[in-house]
Image 1: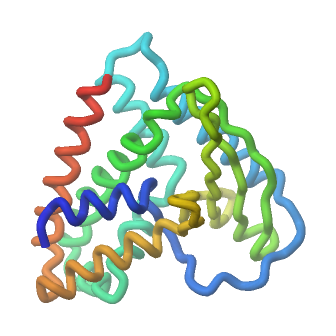
Image 2 (image 1 turned 180 degrees about the vertical axis):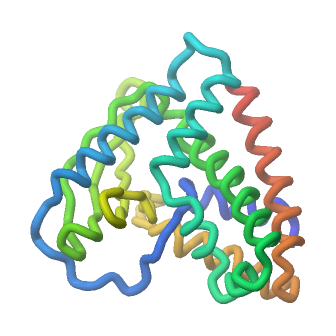
Length: 223
C-alpha cells in the first residue's frame, strides 16, 4: 500500500492512539480526580512545550518527545496496533525492539503534527468517568485553539493504572462530527496493510518511516 495511505490514516486518526478499547463496558458514574489531574498536568506541559519559542525547534522536539513517552504507554500502543500480527513480536526480540522504536517515533510525530496548532493553548478538564473503579478512566477535556473565535477541540483520554502509575492508552477526537476512538481506527489501518503484504511488519515499518520523515519536514517548516 502506498505511503500516502498511512499518511491519510494518520490524519483521519489524528492523535495516534493507543489502547485497548473494544466494546466498552458500562461506565461507572464516579469521577476520578487523580486521573483528571494527571491529564491536566501532562497535556498542559506538552502544549506549553510546543508553544515555547524561547528554545530551539530541536529542543522543543526533544522535550515534547520525552513528555509524550512519559504520558502514553508506547509499548502497549505499539503492540495493540498490530492486532493479530503482534504474535510476531513475541517470537522475535529484535523485531519487537525495532518495531517499538519505529512506531514510537511515528506516534510522537503524529501527536506533534496534530497538536501543534494548539501549542501554548489552555486545556480544560470537563469531567471523567470510571470504567473500572480506580483502574480504568476516561477523562474529558477541551483544548481552545489559538485563533480568536475558534471552536474548542473535544478530546477524551483513556487511562489505565498499573501499580501507582497512570498511562494514557487511547485518545478520542471529534472528527467530522463523529467521536472516534483512535487506537481502533489505527489498528484497522495497519491490519489492512499487513493483510495486503502477507503480514510483513518490516515492510510496514519502511512505509511508516517514510510517513514519519514527511511529517517531521512539515513540522520543521512551520517552526
